[in-house]
Length: 203
Image (tube, rainbow, N blue to C red; front, side, top):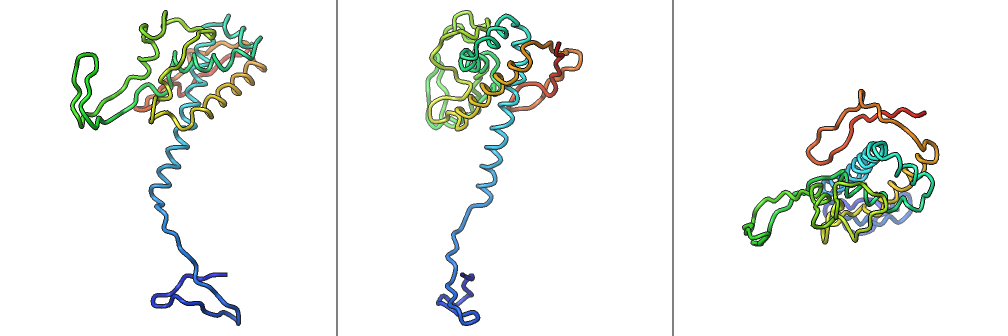
């Protein structure tokens, strides 16, 4: 049992004949902790939900590849990577340069605000041949939809797992669907891209 020490009193006291030691209080940065928790919740739910919306749309547009995934779940991990490359849920990343850097013949001064177009990078023909083509069997070493280097997404492994399990379960129950484009509605945000509503019709 412990009680907070009163001002000017740091020793043990008694309460009902029992010794009561003063509590050791550890200061916590509540504001920073709550902000970080909010970041994890928003980043971990918003982006995966957008990814699944894009999966519904893209697989509706490629029914042959959807059938391949329904028939062979071993293709799903690579399909998730291709979906992330092809339709990045988080298409831009803001950065602040700490020193001058030269990119493509142009010098970006230190202290510059830079917006990285990661969604565009996923369609770069210099990295991905025939980049405008969606292919669940495409082989590539990496994409930048989770960022790169020290800024790599903390929840990347969880997002991949969630995407794979969700697609596996959906395709097991509903191997075919049609997007109801008359009722589809895009989301408008500054950080992620996807669908606010994407209803589907199941045969």
